[in-house]
Amino acid sequence: GTTVIMSTHNMELAYRMCDRLLKLDAGMPEEVQENILKGTIETIDDQFAYFRTGDILLRCPARQGDFAVAVLPWDELILSRQPLESSARNQLSGVVTEVRPFGSLLVAVVDCGLPLRALITAAAAAEVGVAPGAACVVTFKASAVRLY
Image (tube, rainbow, N blue to C red):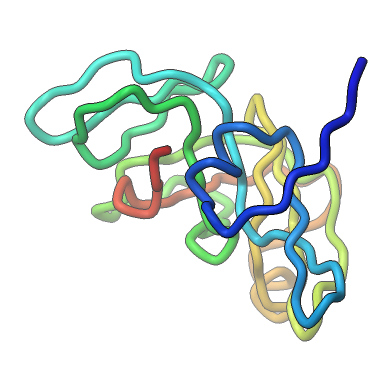
């Protein structure tokens, strides 16, 4: 029941300690453009570390360590109607719950068992049919996931 406000430039500490992050740019608050997911490493093989967050298992770069947070930048996510044939190792099906303006782009929130935010252009959103209630596939490379 206690709130603690911490100021740091040490992002590894911030990701591990905080439930919410606020970025300041020239003293003004700015939305953090990353999905910050709490969880644990379930297994590691020669190619991937498997990070569990809720019911979702993400393929990440194979790294040894005691990681508790996976960070996924909004601009690394690709939204599509159907699964893509690509080298990307993470594909999650979900439903769009929100679409809102974000500068010259849009932020789409897709519920894949956990909410993931993705940046998309208005033209791409119209082409793919990204709108609240629409089915959507979120795709991203294992290398897009940073572990802390």
